[in-house]
Length: 240
Image (cartoon, rainbow, N blue to C red; front, side, top):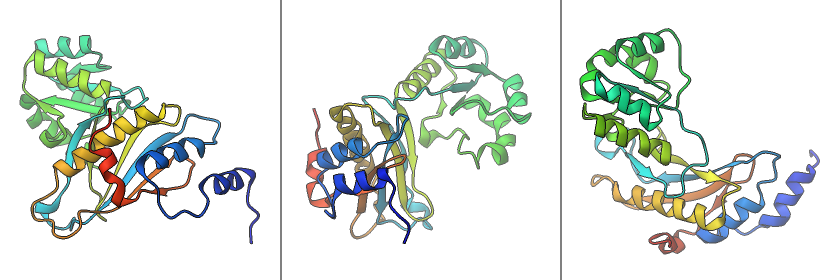
């Protein structure tokens, strides 16, 4: 049997053999178990009672994290005319029309979010095979397709830079969302966790039958997964 490292022993001492925790306990332990030499990302993972093979049981939406993500989000915008200037003034790293499409087509992907005005979706469609696998293709459900107006573009850029994130289920019916950094105060992580939980509940597919949230766990980049007691989720209904 392989010998445990010092870090593994520390984590075992912290977590013990308790099978699950309240949301607030899980947040505290995730922070304590983040022992890496960098600021670890804290993530929540939901296993949902949906059938991902059915189109009417897909879970996809966005949520604005009240405490932000703790990361610098690089936003680019495909737009025309005055909307380009509005995007840059709002903090986009780049914005444009045909020239931006050519840049991406040439292999440039130094961005995290691509926002497009509705009138740019047709030209962007030719990049579907490039952007789709990278989960960068703009989509109305993700809030990344907006009206072709400076105000709409400015608002979208500001929201995504400020902590708006997209979530969607994978092929196994799981949803993963980063809710901040281990350096965040516990209350900040709880506020973000509450926002994500409520957003997940809000988009429950009407076709999904049985228990909606089957398991729910928190973890940091290098830490263990801590299961949350489903009977204690009322803690997340409202976090001040």
